[in-house]
Amino acid sequence: MNVLTALFLGGLVVAALVDAAVAVYAWCRRPAAGSLSLCALTVANGWWALGYLFELLAVDLPTKLLWARLEWLGVLAGPVAWLCFALTYTGRDRYVTPGTVAVASVVPALAYVAVWTNPLHGLMWTAPAVAPLGVLTVLDLDWGVGYWVALGYSYLLMALGAAVLVRTALALPRLYRVQASVLVVGAAMPLLGNVVSAWLAVRGAALDITPIAFVGAGIACAASLAYLDLLDVRPVPASVAREHVVEHMHDAVIITDVRGCVTDVNEAATGLFGASVTALRGTPVTTLLPHRPDGSGATTVELPVDGSPRFFDLNASDLEDSHGRLIGTVLVLRDVTERRLHLQRLEVLNRVLRHNLRNEMNVVAGYADMIASAAPSDRADLVRYAEAISRSASDLTDIAENAREVETLTDPTTDQHVVSARRVIVDAVSAVRDAYPDAEVVAETLPDPCVAVPWSLESVVANLVENAAEHNPKPTPHVSVAAEADDDWVTVRVRDDGPGIPATERLTFEASRETPLVHGNGLGLWLVRWGTQAAGGTVSFHDLDPGTEVVVRVPVVDGDPADGGE
Image: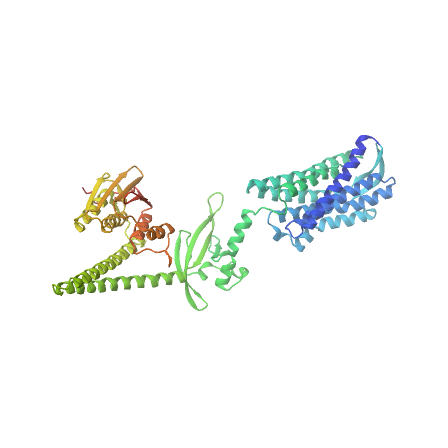
């Protein structure tokens, strides 16, 4: 026996051992997705390699044919197991069912029956003989049509599995691309070896190098298991993830064709309309909704659900093919009944409380003034009490007024006009000077009168300047306002020399929400925050020594301010 023959036979032994090791490992990990199909794949490959080894070592024709028939089990089962593994590995295991596996195995099963019954029909081979090849003897067969059908079918399954892997890997992170690449390369080696062996067999007796190539396939699987976490980490294809999200989302999804007939729905839609997917398909969407959406945006519709009206936000978007041609519409229905009722309650409570609060506080302030005026000259304490009541009433009235401003700022139906940034600052400074004559309020720098900003900046700057003067206990509070503008942004800086913003107020602002333990004393900071957000800008606070600096940045917008101001 020469060296090449020994290496070839040794390679068959190595291929069988490597495949056996991978099969045992996969079997031990069989709860993991893909483990059973990987185990079946490596068992089939190892069985092929082992069967071919004994076929080569056999001397007489009947024994060689026996081993050849036995190894055909691995030859035909391997491609089916490969496709099952590729589908499971890429998250498409819903396609790997007993039924689909049985269908995929029909051709291999028929081919295996033909292998054992070949003497009756000769579909797989004819004229079997033993031919010498060096120190070995090999089977010399004239392949029949059944062989070529089985071979082509096996190539098809291998190609499908590789295509699934490659397509998934291209859309995923590097780890999965490496995993898939190693597996595809490992699977391509036996496939290439089989192509070469089939070509050589047509030309005469030759060794089948396919089982030797299983060494590469086994090593690829072993490397993926050891270094790439195969069976532990597998990719989630974007198509599978999107399908899962759509199918299990709480919003009802309806897909219609260009005629407005339903072509598909998700589970939430079947529950909403009380019908199965099959029953809904082909149904005109106008029988389900008050009107046929045109794919141009969102609207609110009212639908009866269990005998009660429910409100839904209906979002429609057109589906187009790769050439931009309309092929259908996607409709998404989100139940907003509770949100709508909640907003209605808040609007009513806000309006009633604000109106009643303002009116009642005016009454309280009036009585406080009467008490102060009627107090005897020797009852200075009554005057102090009346003034305290009047201040508290004024504070509550201010809160009611701020609530009104907040409602205006957050109302999407409010006229979104533009104003002059210069006029905003001039008006705010002038108003605070009149309201607090002891305060020193200055506008240090002003932008060009033609610089336009969103109207909500008016409330933001006015509130900041007023609070800076109002909450400063010094005899002469100092407040400065500076603004600068470039092509895109206006930056307004409001500085004071007061005690600074209380820690609880800052915490509430930075947390973006209030809790029973962390809350503010009013709406001032919230008005600043929401007004800035409505303008599409940002607000930040900086501690000074002494005092605070508030920096507001809002975008410059197109438009002609009504009055630039001086």
